[in-house]
Image (cartoon, rainbow, N blue to C red; front, side, top):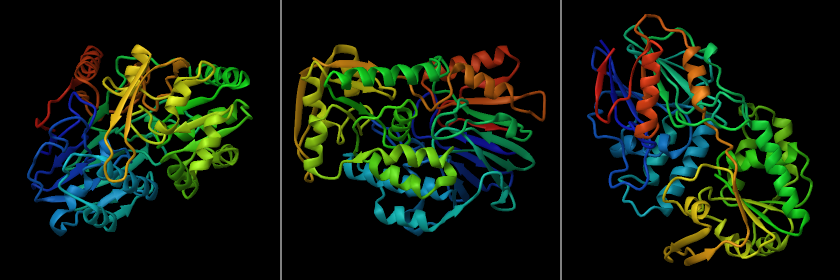
Length: 435
Protein backbone atom coordinates (compact mmCIF):
# COMPACT_ATOMS: atom_id res chain seq x y z
CA UNK A 1 0.00 0.00 0.00
CA UNK A 2 1.28 3.48 -0.89
CA UNK A 3 1.65 6.23 1.71
CA UNK A 4 1.05 10.00 1.50
CA UNK A 5 2.81 12.24 4.02
CA UNK A 6 1.94 15.93 4.22
CA UNK A 7 5.07 18.02 4.77
CA UNK A 8 3.39 21.41 4.39
CA UNK A 9 0.38 23.45 3.20
CA UNK A 10 -1.66 21.82 5.96
CA UNK A 11 -4.18 24.34 7.33
CA UNK A 12 -1.85 27.04 6.06
CA UNK A 13 -0.94 28.75 2.79
CA UNK A 14 2.75 28.09 2.26
CA UNK A 15 5.46 25.44 1.98
CA UNK A 16 3.42 23.11 -0.22
CA UNK A 17 5.08 19.69 -0.10
CA UNK A 18 3.48 16.26 -0.47
CA UNK A 19 5.60 13.10 -0.09
CA UNK A 20 4.36 9.88 -1.71
CA UNK A 21 6.01 6.55 -0.85
CA UNK A 22 5.54 3.29 -2.73
CA UNK A 23 5.15 -0.16 -1.18
CA UNK A 24 8.84 -0.75 -2.01
CA UNK A 25 9.83 2.35 -0.02
CA UNK A 26 10.69 4.61 -2.96
CA UNK A 27 9.65 8.25 -2.74
CA UNK A 28 8.32 11.03 -4.95
CA UNK A 29 7.66 14.68 -4.01
CA UNK A 30 4.86 16.91 -5.25
CA UNK A 31 6.03 20.54 -4.82
CA UNK A 32 8.56 21.72 -2.26
CA UNK A 33 7.90 25.31 -1.25
CA UNK A 34 8.59 27.81 1.51
CA UNK A 35 6.39 29.90 3.77
CA UNK A 36 6.91 33.46 5.01
CA UNK A 37 6.92 35.08 8.41
CA UNK A 38 7.53 31.91 10.36
CA UNK A 39 10.54 30.70 12.33
CA UNK A 40 10.67 27.50 10.26
CA UNK A 41 10.11 28.23 6.58
CA UNK A 42 11.01 24.91 4.99
CA UNK A 43 8.72 21.88 4.71
CA UNK A 44 8.43 19.46 7.62
CA UNK A 45 11.65 17.46 8.00
CA UNK A 46 11.57 13.99 6.52
CA UNK A 47 13.97 11.26 5.44
CA UNK A 48 14.28 11.67 1.66
CA UNK A 49 17.06 9.17 1.03
CA UNK A 50 14.93 7.14 -1.39
CA UNK A 51 13.70 10.11 -3.40
CA UNK A 52 13.22 9.17 -7.06
CA UNK A 53 12.05 12.56 -8.24
CA UNK A 54 10.06 15.73 -7.63
CA UNK A 55 7.47 17.52 -9.74
CA UNK A 56 6.47 21.18 -9.29
CA UNK A 57 3.02 22.55 -10.14
CA UNK A 58 4.11 26.15 -10.76
CA UNK A 59 6.67 28.83 -10.05
CA UNK A 60 5.32 30.61 -6.95
CA UNK A 61 7.82 30.20 -4.11
CA UNK A 62 5.26 28.69 -1.73
CA UNK A 63 5.38 25.74 -4.16
CA UNK A 64 8.93 25.93 -5.56
CA UNK A 65 11.03 27.97 -3.13
CA UNK A 66 12.59 25.10 -1.16
CA UNK A 67 13.48 22.96 -4.20
CA UNK A 68 17.21 23.87 -4.03
CA UNK A 69 17.34 22.21 -0.60
CA UNK A 70 16.88 18.86 -2.36
CA UNK A 71 20.12 19.48 -4.30
CA UNK A 72 22.46 20.02 -1.35
CA UNK A 73 25.64 17.94 -1.23
CA UNK A 74 25.50 17.21 -4.98
CA UNK A 75 22.24 15.28 -4.75
CA UNK A 76 20.58 15.02 -8.15
CA UNK A 77 16.92 13.96 -8.04
CA UNK A 78 15.17 14.62 -11.38
CA UNK A 79 12.88 17.67 -11.36
CA UNK A 80 9.83 17.37 -13.64
CA UNK A 81 8.52 20.71 -14.81
CA UNK A 82 8.34 22.87 -17.94
CA UNK A 83 10.62 25.55 -19.32
CA UNK A 84 8.51 28.51 -18.28
CA UNK A 85 8.03 27.32 -14.70
CA UNK A 86 11.75 26.60 -14.38
CA UNK A 87 12.78 30.00 -15.75
CA UNK A 88 10.45 31.97 -13.51
CA UNK A 89 11.15 29.79 -10.44
CA UNK A 90 14.86 30.47 -10.92
CA UNK A 91 14.24 34.25 -10.83
CA UNK A 92 11.84 34.15 -7.89
CA UNK A 93 13.97 31.88 -5.70
CA UNK A 94 17.08 33.97 -6.34
CA UNK A 95 15.13 37.13 -5.52
CA UNK A 96 13.92 35.54 -2.27
CA UNK A 97 17.49 34.75 -1.29
CA UNK A 98 18.60 38.32 -2.03
CA UNK A 99 15.91 40.13 -0.07
CA UNK A 100 15.25 37.71 2.81
CA UNK A 101 16.90 37.91 6.20
CA UNK A 102 16.06 34.24 6.81
CA UNK A 103 19.18 32.00 6.69
CA UNK A 104 18.14 29.53 3.99
CA UNK A 105 20.48 26.49 3.97
CA UNK A 106 21.07 26.70 0.21
CA UNK A 107 22.26 29.19 -2.37
CA UNK A 108 22.85 29.85 -6.04
CA UNK A 109 24.98 26.71 -6.40
CA UNK A 110 22.05 24.49 -5.44
CA UNK A 111 19.71 26.45 -7.73
CA UNK A 112 22.06 25.78 -10.63
CA UNK A 113 22.19 22.08 -9.72
CA UNK A 114 18.40 22.04 -9.61
CA UNK A 115 18.22 23.50 -13.12
CA UNK A 116 20.73 20.98 -14.47
CA UNK A 117 18.48 18.14 -13.28
CA UNK A 118 15.25 19.49 -14.79
CA UNK A 119 13.24 17.41 -17.24
CA UNK A 120 10.51 19.08 -19.27
CA UNK A 121 7.21 17.28 -19.52
CA UNK A 122 4.46 18.41 -21.94
CA UNK A 123 0.90 18.45 -20.61
CA UNK A 124 -0.98 15.22 -21.25
CA UNK A 125 2.19 13.12 -21.64
CA UNK A 126 2.46 10.13 -19.27
CA UNK A 127 6.06 9.78 -18.06
CA UNK A 128 7.69 6.86 -16.24
CA UNK A 129 9.79 8.11 -13.33
CA UNK A 130 10.88 4.76 -11.94
CA UNK A 131 9.41 1.26 -11.69
CA UNK A 132 7.15 2.67 -8.94
CA UNK A 133 5.96 5.99 -10.36
CA UNK A 134 4.36 7.55 -13.45
CA UNK A 135 3.34 11.19 -13.75
CA UNK A 136 1.12 13.21 -16.09
CA UNK A 137 0.59 16.99 -16.18
CA UNK A 138 -2.77 18.71 -16.78
CA UNK A 139 -3.65 22.39 -17.17
CA UNK A 140 -4.34 24.09 -13.82
CA UNK A 141 -5.48 27.50 -15.10
CA UNK A 142 -3.63 29.36 -12.31
CA UNK A 143 -0.70 31.17 -13.97
CA UNK A 144 1.16 30.56 -17.25
CA UNK A 145 2.95 27.21 -16.99
CA UNK A 146 0.90 25.96 -14.02
CA UNK A 147 -0.15 22.30 -13.93
CA UNK A 148 -2.05 19.78 -11.87
CA UNK A 149 -0.36 16.39 -11.46
CA UNK A 150 -1.63 12.82 -11.62
CA UNK A 151 0.88 10.52 -9.92
CA UNK A 152 0.50 6.76 -10.37
CA UNK A 153 1.97 4.57 -7.64
CA UNK A 154 1.34 0.87 -6.93
CA UNK A 155 -1.72 0.85 -9.17
CA UNK A 156 -3.26 3.91 -7.50
CA UNK A 157 -3.79 7.30 -9.16
CA UNK A 158 -3.35 10.40 -7.00
CA UNK A 159 -4.45 13.81 -8.28
CA UNK A 160 -2.62 16.79 -6.82
CA UNK A 161 -4.43 19.90 -7.99
CA UNK A 162 -1.79 22.46 -7.06
CA UNK A 163 -3.32 25.93 -7.34
CA UNK A 164 -6.27 25.90 -9.73
CA UNK A 165 -8.64 28.37 -11.33
CA UNK A 166 -11.90 27.23 -12.89
CA UNK A 167 -12.55 30.61 -14.52
CA UNK A 168 -10.75 31.84 -17.62
CA UNK A 169 -8.52 34.87 -17.27
CA UNK A 170 -7.03 37.01 -20.00
CA UNK A 171 -3.68 35.21 -19.65
CA UNK A 172 -4.61 31.53 -19.41
CA UNK A 173 -7.49 29.10 -19.90
CA UNK A 174 -9.21 27.56 -16.90
CA UNK A 175 -8.62 24.15 -15.36
CA UNK A 176 -10.91 21.49 -16.79
CA UNK A 177 -11.63 18.62 -14.34
CA UNK A 178 -13.19 16.53 -17.12
CA UNK A 179 -9.69 16.17 -18.64
CA UNK A 180 -8.46 14.36 -15.51
CA UNK A 181 -8.59 10.55 -15.84
CA UNK A 182 -10.27 8.30 -13.29
CA UNK A 183 -8.43 8.68 -9.96
CA UNK A 184 -8.36 7.02 -6.54
CA UNK A 185 -7.36 10.01 -4.38
CA UNK A 186 -7.47 13.81 -4.79
CA UNK A 187 -5.40 16.43 -2.96
CA UNK A 188 -7.12 19.76 -3.58
CA UNK A 189 -6.27 23.34 -2.71
CA UNK A 190 -8.67 25.33 -0.48
CA UNK A 191 -7.40 28.91 -0.60
CA UNK A 192 -10.78 30.53 -1.24
CA UNK A 193 -13.06 27.78 0.05
CA UNK A 194 -14.90 30.37 2.16
CA UNK A 195 -15.22 33.11 -0.46
CA UNK A 196 -17.13 33.82 -3.63
CA UNK A 197 -15.41 35.98 -6.26
CA UNK A 198 -17.40 38.78 -7.92
CA UNK A 199 -18.42 38.35 -11.59
CA UNK A 200 -15.19 38.76 -13.53
CA UNK A 201 -16.42 40.76 -16.53
CA UNK A 202 -18.27 43.28 -14.36
CA UNK A 203 -15.24 43.72 -12.13
CA UNK A 204 -12.94 44.31 -15.11
CA UNK A 205 -15.24 47.03 -16.46
CA UNK A 206 -15.49 48.69 -13.06
CA UNK A 207 -11.69 48.67 -12.68
CA UNK A 208 -11.07 50.25 -16.08
CA UNK A 209 -13.85 52.82 -15.65
CA UNK A 210 -12.40 53.83 -12.28
CA UNK A 211 -8.92 54.11 -13.81
CA UNK A 212 -10.19 56.31 -16.65
CA UNK A 213 -12.08 58.57 -14.26
CA UNK A 214 -8.92 59.21 -12.22
CA UNK A 215 -6.59 59.75 -15.19
CA UNK A 216 -9.02 62.02 -17.05
CA UNK A 217 -9.14 64.23 -13.96
CA UNK A 218 -5.35 64.59 -14.10
CA UNK A 219 -4.47 61.97 -11.51
CA UNK A 220 -2.10 58.98 -11.56
CA UNK A 221 -3.18 55.43 -10.73
CA UNK A 222 -0.69 53.16 -8.99
CA UNK A 223 -1.56 49.47 -9.42
CA UNK A 224 0.63 47.42 -7.06
CA UNK A 225 0.64 43.93 -8.57
CA UNK A 226 2.40 40.60 -8.23
CA UNK A 227 5.19 40.26 -10.79
CA UNK A 228 3.97 36.83 -11.90
CA UNK A 229 0.73 36.89 -13.92
CA UNK A 230 -1.12 39.66 -12.04
CA UNK A 231 0.90 42.53 -13.54
CA UNK A 232 0.39 41.13 -17.02
CA UNK A 233 -3.29 40.39 -16.33
CA UNK A 234 -3.89 43.99 -15.24
CA UNK A 235 -2.27 45.26 -18.43
CA UNK A 236 -4.37 42.93 -20.58
CA UNK A 237 -7.57 44.03 -18.81
CA UNK A 238 -6.75 47.67 -19.51
CA UNK A 239 -6.05 46.91 -23.16
CA UNK A 240 -9.17 44.73 -23.53
CA UNK A 241 -11.44 47.53 -22.30
CA UNK A 242 -9.75 50.15 -24.46
CA UNK A 243 -7.72 52.14 -21.99
CA UNK A 244 -5.50 54.10 -24.40
CA UNK A 245 -3.60 56.57 -22.22
CA UNK A 246 -0.15 56.32 -20.66
CA UNK A 247 0.70 52.95 -19.13
CA UNK A 248 3.97 52.15 -17.34
CA UNK A 249 5.36 48.86 -16.02
CA UNK A 250 8.01 48.80 -13.28
CA UNK A 251 9.62 46.20 -11.00
CA UNK A 252 10.15 42.48 -11.56
CA UNK A 253 6.99 42.34 -13.66
CA UNK A 254 9.11 43.67 -16.53
CA UNK A 255 11.36 40.61 -16.46
CA UNK A 256 8.47 38.15 -16.12
CA UNK A 257 6.63 39.84 -19.00
CA UNK A 258 9.65 39.34 -21.24
CA UNK A 259 10.00 35.69 -20.20
CA UNK A 260 6.37 35.08 -21.22
CA UNK A 261 7.27 36.19 -24.75
CA UNK A 262 9.60 33.18 -24.91
CA UNK A 263 6.77 30.74 -24.11
CA UNK A 264 3.78 31.79 -26.25
CA UNK A 265 2.33 28.27 -26.03
CA UNK A 266 1.69 28.89 -22.31
CA UNK A 267 -0.59 31.86 -23.02
CA UNK A 268 -4.27 31.72 -23.91
CA UNK A 269 -3.83 34.23 -26.73
CA UNK A 270 -0.26 35.17 -27.61
CA UNK A 271 -1.46 37.81 -30.13
CA UNK A 272 -3.55 39.69 -27.56
CA UNK A 273 -0.67 39.47 -25.10
CA UNK A 274 1.74 41.01 -27.57
CA UNK A 275 -0.77 43.69 -28.49
CA UNK A 276 -1.32 44.63 -24.84
CA UNK A 277 2.37 44.76 -24.01
CA UNK A 278 3.10 46.81 -27.13
CA UNK A 279 1.31 49.76 -25.49
CA UNK A 280 3.35 49.56 -22.28
CA UNK A 281 6.26 51.87 -21.43
CA UNK A 282 8.83 49.79 -19.52
CA UNK A 283 10.46 51.83 -16.73
CA UNK A 284 14.17 51.12 -17.00
CA UNK A 285 15.78 54.32 -15.71
CA UNK A 286 15.41 56.81 -12.87
CA UNK A 287 14.39 59.52 -15.33
CA UNK A 288 11.55 57.37 -16.67
CA UNK A 289 10.28 56.87 -13.10
CA UNK A 290 10.10 60.63 -12.74
CA UNK A 291 8.10 60.85 -15.96
CA UNK A 292 5.74 58.09 -14.80
CA UNK A 293 5.27 59.72 -11.40
CA UNK A 294 4.17 63.02 -12.98
CA UNK A 295 1.98 61.48 -15.67
CA UNK A 296 -1.79 61.28 -15.82
CA UNK A 297 -1.62 57.56 -16.43
CA UNK A 298 -1.31 54.14 -14.87
CA UNK A 299 1.77 52.64 -13.20
CA UNK A 300 1.70 48.86 -12.71
CA UNK A 301 4.49 47.92 -10.31
CA UNK A 302 5.60 45.32 -7.78
CA UNK A 303 5.07 44.50 -5.02
CA UNK A 304 1.47 43.37 -4.93
CA UNK A 305 1.09 43.80 -1.15
CA UNK A 306 3.32 46.90 -0.95
CA UNK A 307 5.91 44.98 1.08
CA UNK A 308 8.71 46.52 -0.99
CA UNK A 309 9.69 46.69 -4.63
CA UNK A 310 9.50 49.48 -7.16
CA UNK A 311 6.02 50.57 -6.02
CA UNK A 312 7.73 52.34 -3.12
CA UNK A 313 9.27 54.76 -5.64
CA UNK A 314 5.78 56.12 -6.32
CA UNK A 315 3.70 55.52 -3.22
CA UNK A 316 4.39 58.77 -1.32
CA UNK A 317 3.58 60.97 -4.31
CA UNK A 318 0.38 59.08 -5.07
CA UNK A 319 -0.86 58.93 -1.47
CA UNK A 320 -0.42 62.68 -1.02
CA UNK A 321 -2.38 63.55 -4.17
CA UNK A 322 -6.19 63.69 -3.74
CA UNK A 323 -6.60 63.40 -7.53
CA UNK A 324 -4.66 60.12 -7.75
CA UNK A 325 -5.43 56.55 -6.67
CA UNK A 326 -3.96 53.28 -5.44
CA UNK A 327 -5.88 50.33 -6.87
CA UNK A 328 -4.87 46.97 -5.39
CA UNK A 329 -5.53 43.93 -7.59
CA UNK A 330 -4.30 41.07 -5.42
CA UNK A 331 -5.32 39.64 -2.05
CA UNK A 332 -3.75 41.55 0.84
CA UNK A 333 -2.54 39.20 3.58
CA UNK A 334 -3.19 40.36 7.11
CA UNK A 335 -0.17 42.19 8.53
CA UNK A 336 1.11 43.45 5.17
CA UNK A 337 1.39 47.20 4.39
CA UNK A 338 -1.21 46.84 1.64
CA UNK A 339 -3.77 45.31 4.02
CA UNK A 340 -3.05 47.99 6.64
CA UNK A 341 -3.57 50.70 4.01
CA UNK A 342 -6.95 49.26 2.99
CA UNK A 343 -8.10 48.82 6.59
CA UNK A 344 -6.91 52.17 8.04
CA UNK A 345 -6.15 54.51 5.11
CA UNK A 346 -2.62 54.72 6.53
CA UNK A 347 0.48 53.37 4.79
CA UNK A 348 3.30 52.28 7.09
CA UNK A 349 6.54 50.89 5.80
CA UNK A 350 10.06 50.71 7.16
CA UNK A 351 13.15 49.17 5.60
CA UNK A 352 16.71 49.70 6.74
CA UNK A 353 19.38 50.28 4.15
CA UNK A 354 21.28 47.06 3.53
CA UNK A 355 23.19 45.64 0.58
CA UNK A 356 22.69 48.85 -1.37
CA UNK A 357 18.90 48.94 -0.91
CA UNK A 358 17.28 52.32 -0.30
CA UNK A 359 16.29 53.25 3.24
CA UNK A 360 12.54 53.79 3.59
CA UNK A 361 10.56 55.02 6.56
CA UNK A 362 7.05 55.97 5.50
CA UNK A 363 3.97 56.76 7.60
CA UNK A 364 1.31 58.54 5.54
CA UNK A 365 -2.44 58.96 5.79
CA UNK A 366 -3.81 58.56 2.29
CA UNK A 367 -5.38 61.57 0.62
CA UNK A 368 -5.85 59.66 -2.64
CA UNK A 369 -8.58 57.22 -3.63
CA UNK A 370 -8.12 53.61 -2.49
CA UNK A 371 -9.81 50.47 -3.78
CA UNK A 372 -9.40 46.70 -4.11
CA UNK A 373 -10.36 44.54 -7.09
CA UNK A 374 -10.55 40.78 -6.57
CA UNK A 375 -8.77 39.52 -9.71
CA UNK A 376 -7.91 36.22 -8.09
CA UNK A 377 -6.20 33.39 -9.97
CA UNK A 378 -7.61 30.79 -7.55
CA UNK A 379 -10.98 29.04 -7.72
CA UNK A 380 -13.54 30.33 -5.22
CA UNK A 381 -15.96 28.17 -3.20
CA UNK A 382 -18.19 27.58 -6.23
CA UNK A 383 -15.25 26.76 -8.47
CA UNK A 384 -13.75 24.32 -5.97
CA UNK A 385 -17.01 22.41 -5.61
CA UNK A 386 -17.46 22.38 -9.39
CA UNK A 387 -13.92 21.02 -9.79
CA UNK A 388 -14.35 18.24 -7.22
CA UNK A 389 -17.84 17.26 -8.38
CA UNK A 390 -16.58 16.77 -11.93
CA UNK A 391 -13.71 14.47 -11.00
CA UNK A 392 -14.08 10.75 -11.72
CA UNK A 393 -13.24 8.35 -8.87
CA UNK A 394 -12.42 4.68 -9.34
CA UNK A 395 -14.02 3.63 -6.07
CA UNK A 396 -16.88 4.59 -3.78
CA UNK A 397 -14.60 5.89 -1.00
CA UNK A 398 -13.82 9.04 -3.03
CA UNK A 399 -10.89 10.14 -0.84
CA UNK A 400 -10.05 13.86 -0.82
CA UNK A 401 -7.48 15.79 1.19
CA UNK A 402 -7.99 19.56 1.49
CA UNK A 403 -4.78 21.62 1.69
CA UNK A 404 -3.38 25.07 0.88
CA UNK A 405 -5.77 27.22 2.90
CA UNK A 406 -5.99 28.52 6.43
CA UNK A 407 -7.36 26.34 9.21
CA UNK A 408 -10.96 27.50 8.73
CA UNK A 409 -10.93 27.19 4.94
CA UNK A 410 -9.40 23.69 4.78
CA UNK A 411 -11.49 22.20 7.60
CA UNK A 412 -14.78 23.75 6.40
CA UNK A 413 -14.16 22.60 2.84
CA UNK A 414 -13.44 19.07 4.05
CA UNK A 415 -16.63 19.09 6.16
CA UNK A 416 -18.74 20.28 3.22
CA UNK A 417 -17.33 17.50 1.04
CA UNK A 418 -18.13 14.90 3.72
CA UNK A 419 -21.76 16.07 3.67
CA UNK A 420 -21.77 15.43 -0.09
CA UNK A 421 -20.58 11.84 0.38
CA UNK A 422 -16.83 12.25 -0.03
CA UNK A 423 -14.33 10.72 2.37
CA UNK A 424 -12.59 14.03 3.04
CA UNK A 425 -10.12 15.23 5.66
CA UNK A 426 -7.98 18.30 6.28
CA UNK A 427 -4.58 16.80 7.22
CA UNK A 428 -2.13 18.25 9.70
CA UNK A 429 1.57 18.74 9.06
CA UNK A 430 3.54 15.52 9.33
CA UNK A 431 0.54 13.21 9.13
CA UNK A 432 0.76 10.07 6.97
CA UNK A 433 -2.15 8.31 5.29
CA UNK A 434 -2.27 4.87 3.68
CA UNK A 435 -4.06 4.59 0.34
